[in-house]
Image (cartoon, rainbow over all chains, first blue to last red; front, side):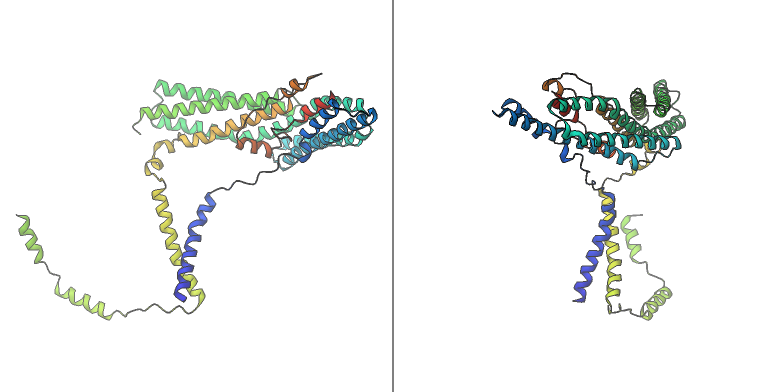
Length: 260
Length: 164
């Protein structure tokens, strides 16, 4: 009996000890956060409005009331969805730590602006029931303009702040790798090889250009919302991507030259 | 000298008589140790743990050998030189992912304004681009992705329809 227990415990402890490092090595995907809110499903409203306008009730008053109800419900859903969208961005920005005093000030400033955005949607929500048919349409147009002129600008800046900060590590890694590759090329006496030297210089050039654009992007980010910021961030990353293309070419070139 | 003669000479090799005597007396005098009986669950558990550790160690070694460990790769100058393709690939992918996230941030916040749009044209205002699940997950974590699903009507499209 005791022998059976001993064998069972042995097998179990062996299994646990054997599987523990494997379980730690395998990264289980985190449950993805719900990206959408029920208020953001608009298909049913679209169908109902189409139906109500194409086949209205014979009673004019009833037809108007039916259409108005659909428009009110839809506008309310759009505003709730916009609030949900703003809340998602605020939560991401709150959790985000830039590790940079200036960028942290900017983060707080953008958070305050996003709070104003939420207040705008709340105000519009409180007015929905007051709208007639025409003013519902006018309100929708006004919200389109406001989103383009205010919400989108604040949201894009928030995104750029997080993106730029995350890019810092990529630039540091690329620079460290570039320096190490240089040391290796020199150690292997391959700098005399014109092709290798050319590729290494090309990598250095695109990396410097990427770093310069990255510095410009930081300046633009700290200025009041500048429409060029996203483009400059993207250009800096594309130059960094080009640097990695040169690294790949260098790796291949060195492989061809060395008996490895 | 022929090999057979050498082997015959080997047969004549004997151990030193004194060494034989000492070894025999050492073996005879060594007490025969009997493993103590397992009297407590704790002792049983500890012995099992030792046995289990041995199994785990053997298992890990087998995985290390069978699972593609290559001394050639580990010692390759490419790893030392930071020119290892796998490491480069991982870093390049991280850069490309940031490019895609930047695209999403731009696209989601720069939807063109179309006045008096028809349903057909309004549905075309957002160029819905397919992105990898890794990128979508990162965009979601950063609050960059739209609140509406890709199959659904976007907020802008809904507002255009409502404004008609």
